Length: 211
Image 1: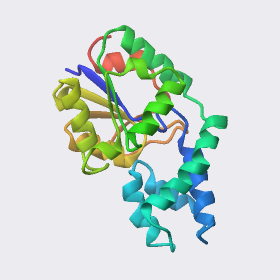
Image 2 (image 1 turned 60 degrees about the vertical axis):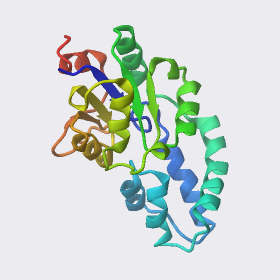
Image 3 (image 1 turned 60 degrees about the horizontal axis):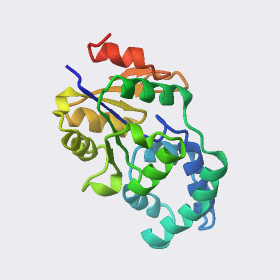
Image 4 (image 1 turned 180 degrees about the vertical axis):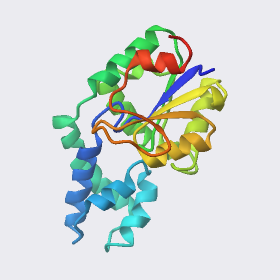
């Protein structure tokens, strides 16, 4: 029986992925590299530490720390001006929290950014556990971030449901021994995984055997 729900953040709770991609695109352009849609898709769900060697193999880049600082300098005002939460996700989190269901966030984003994004939309208070990609040894598709979330929630992985949007995250959840549902807001279907176009608390309750 599912006892806890663990959400990815970017692409599931907040619409940050296009803004992050734009920040990377602008900074990489300064180093003579045009970020492609294929690059963006490859990097979805990865930590910035795992993105760096992939991008560094394609362009002459500064150190990881310097590049990340440049990206953050561009991304911060983009988030301030344009970042939005998904209304269906906000409503779902609020409804599940009201039911007393333990909730967590496990994301490839750094913990600091996760806290900022969740606080911005008054979502932080609903989550008992927050685990960022910079807090585990291996990023997605390794299961580390989800296993850490389950451990901190005090719930066995097999009793956790993960809500993801990226293939790397879905693979990580399965590797952790968790059930996973993939949110594709454009209506796409990810082969091998249950897929939905919106998040709904009633549907999650049904998967948990509560409806």
